[in-house]
Amino acid sequence: IIIAPMAAGDSVDVSWSASADVFYSYSLNQPAAHERAYTTQPARNAEIGLMLGYVGLAVNGPDYRGRIAVQEGWFTRANYLGSDSTWRWLQEASAGLRISNGLWLDAGVMFSHIGYESMIGRDNLTLSRSFTADYTPYYSTGAAVSWSISESVTVTGLVLNGWQQIVDINDDVAFGTRLLVKPSAELALNWSTFVGNEQPRGLPSLVRFHNNLWAEWKPSASWTLVLMGDYCMQEAGADTSVQQWYAGVIASHALSDVFRLTARAEHYSDPNNLFVATPSGAPFEATAASVNLDYRPNAAFLVRCEVRTMRSADNVFPSRSGLKSSDTYVTVSTSVAFGE
Image (cartoon, rainbow, N blue to C red):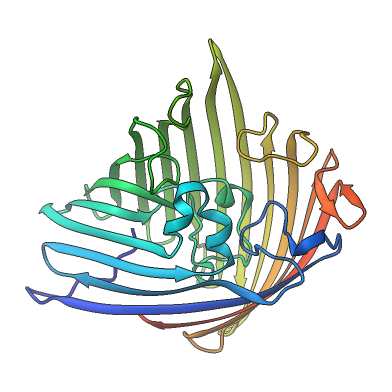
């Protein structure tokens, strides 16, 4: 959960924030009907559109905190599916209570505890989301108990409706954990888990167990290096299961006070289409690389340009002339943000 810093003493801090991110993305494959494959930021091809816009209000006191935010954009239309589609306007609605020093209880619709990247694009090092970000939850609904054991260690336990679910799809609760360790100002280590049945009501239970790990290292004021990894196992029937895994690396360098260059390489393996369904039914085994250049003249304004290429052993990427084994696209975005 992202919360603005609390005010000192017994005062109450009320702050607002707003952002709008407009983008244009063009694929060399020229897929039909402006549809992009396997990405939600960007979510449309050859079309100028609002990637994500939101307005939020946060309240922080010594013993309580909360945030409510509304949103719209192509990102929400691509991610809030099924029963959740009617709630796509709600980015977060959470409230928290301090139980004791360092121990908090938060509940409501919250940002996900899984993954290095946020749904808010300008907060990330790369313009587009990694494969693992797009296929793990951006948000969740439930309750979380977080305990700051020390200045460097925070442990969180969660009870959730399910895997990126506002409206519960079955009668089972899901569980999550998060361990965040910051041994120094330059290094952060994170391990997040999810365990739960993700089958709709009326179908036999199939439990999903997901592990997400990431490490962020800042060896200097201008460099940021990130390692990301996922491993997921889900039951597929009696005494059988399917697996999915991911590995990625991000390197980002501030060229100056206003320019930043970022590169990413990643591989996503989903041989049984647990998360990614391909048009041909072939397994989704894809390797991708991207480079983006950011221009940030001030805290409010950000312009980004990214080139990303994705390749697979099978023909899984839509194009104007049928399925292909690769897709390369260029995206430009401009975003503004106000408030805290």
